Length: 166
Image 1 (cartoon, rainbow, N blue to C red):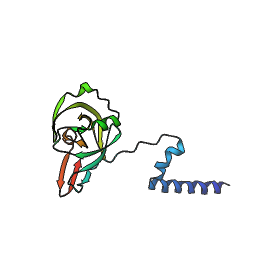
Image 2 (cartoon, rainbow, N blue to C red):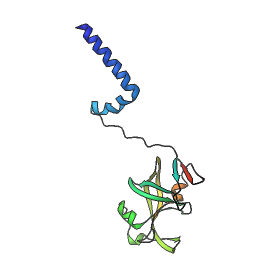
Image 3 (cartoon, one colour):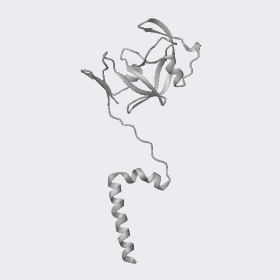
Image 4 (cartoon, rainbow, N blue to C red):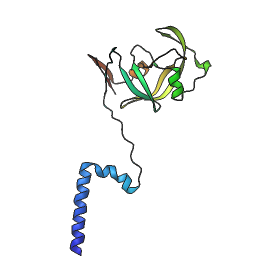
């Protein structure tokens, strides 16, 4: 009987050793113990973008946890969101908030200055980002402007590739 217990204990120890070396034990531990699984840590490496056919750099990101597709625009002073995107992600902007005059390709328009709690692109997270909400129909694409880009560790363009470093 004692021999069986010793053999069983040895098998368990070998199995636990093998599982811990593979990382499987750490992934299974929350389910086995009833503990909450840890939040995944986002990758902190650079974000590598390829230019599209027209030479623009498109990137999927998020604003306050809601998905937003941006065009990287180093010529835009701030992040700029269309009124439609602002509404979709839950930003409520009153008509009286459109107090900032901004120049666009279509002329000068009034925009609503806002502060975004968080903008994420890949593993890069920037908090408290100044942005503008553009009026209805004034912006066809959301812009990832310098209020985000200037807070990165670096931006490098080589050929048709752009690298955003945290």
